[in-house]
Length: 217
Image 1 (cartoon, rainbow, N blue to C red):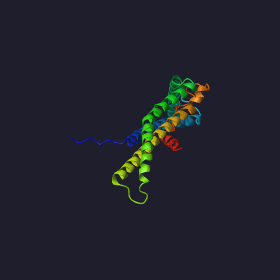
Image 2 (image 1 turned 135 degrees about the vertical axis):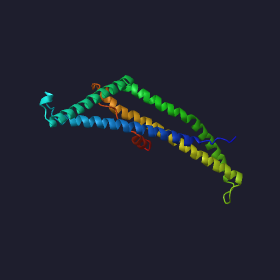
Image 3 (image 1 turned 135 degrees about the horizontal axis):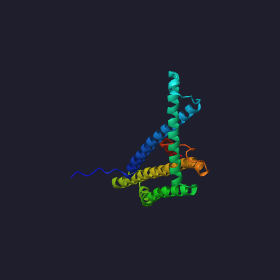
Image 4 (image 1 turned 90 degrees about the vertical axis):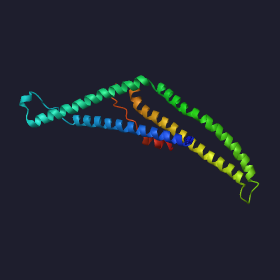
């Protein structure tokens, strides 16, 4: 039976983060498109004077078109207001105050921190191994290392690099969580301050691009 190809842990982390980023980007694009449509409809409606649309039989063709367009925009704005109210209420129900939101953020960060336990233990092992190898290498200051010793050194270096990638991925994951909750708080603070549900608008996440930028800081 052919052995299964094993994917290194660092590659699994990178692939998982890529999928998370793609999902976040897709959700962000949809939310931003919806918010843009709502803002456009609201702006267009405010720029128009409400037309006189009765009696219908007395309207000219141009007035009929104007009334239909006004009604269309009014329907979109009303739908957006109801959607925003539902969205605002959902956020307030989940996070009634900043303390609840901070608690959720802390719990999510902790779920990543626990993943550092095993890599930290492995790093300690590799550092001990590195010190031993360094002492052995010092016996060959001018010549090539014996093959078995060179292989040990190469393996230690490769393991260190893999751990560095793994730690980098976990750092990115924590940065993504912090950025997400910070983004949410900028929206929620208006509701916590007493803004009536429906007046704040739909929550529009910054998306994967901002998360990636936060991960590099």
